[in-house]
Amino acid sequence: MLQRAAVKVSLNEPKKKLLDMFAYMRNYGTSEVHLVHVRTRTNFREREKAEHALEELGTEVNELGMASAFSIRNGYAPRVMTEVAAKVRADYLALYWKPKALLRHALLGSIDSDILRMSNMPVFIYNPKLFRPVVELESVLYATDFRFTDAVAMPYLKSSRFKARILYLLHVGERAPDPDTEAARRESALENLRRLAGECAHAYDHVEVIETLGSVRSQIVRQAKAKKVDLIVAGKSDKPGTMSRLVGSTAEVLPHRAHCSVFIIPSVCGLPRADEVEASEVPAPGPENGSAPTEADHA
Image (cartoon, rainbow, N blue to C red; front, top):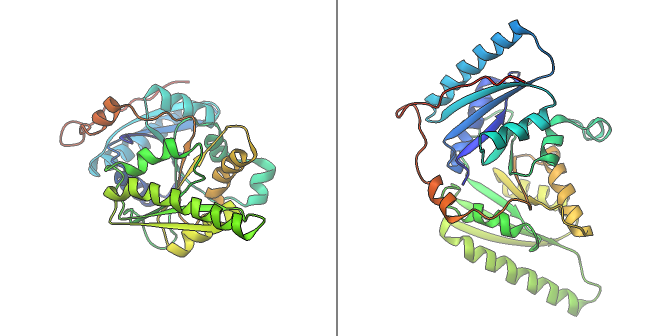
């Protein structure tokens, strides 16, 4: 299901932390990575240096037990990333996140934010810890609104390839105008959370439901920090309606505010077919079986 990833590589990332990201991605069952280096200008000597650096990085990725290949392309990074990901049939995009000031982001935007907004496939945003490497996926928080995103997010969370020990299911509601209606609203929310928990119970040692009130994005960040989770999973809906727009904007803001990594799944992602799930269980070629060849695509 998440076997193959297209990874944006600027070659300015700290190599140790970048390799930590690849090790972390193995928690999703990822066994193949396609490294994508996007350039804005053509310079033969610099291109040769980039090819050499990507070949070295690919060798170290192979040592982690993952197959690797690479592309070097010129152009606008969000467009190139989506094109290459489609070409290599990636299951998701992966970004090494570099935090940016929210005001600067609001005024100027960012390439990573544009990729997140434009992508029609899941996007994993790796948030490297400052003092300790994070390569194990211990706990996950999934924020649900019980509407458009559950259909695409739940298959990932229920998959045995998604290796985590603890799952927190969070719903952030809006208080009803009177006590009786509020009690009914809360009971309905808890019933839905318990239903989702039952669907996921087989894949985790512990599943906990959290129902709370407040700002959606603030509560997601607050609860994730309080529970010390390693990953936030959230849907991004483009469907019309106030709540759907809020879910979409929250997904785009989360990487800037969360203390941990984030996995965003757009509502346009279709449910995995049975044959796709079965195919994802077949081991990909690795160092022991012959690594995938590298390639350098021209713009």
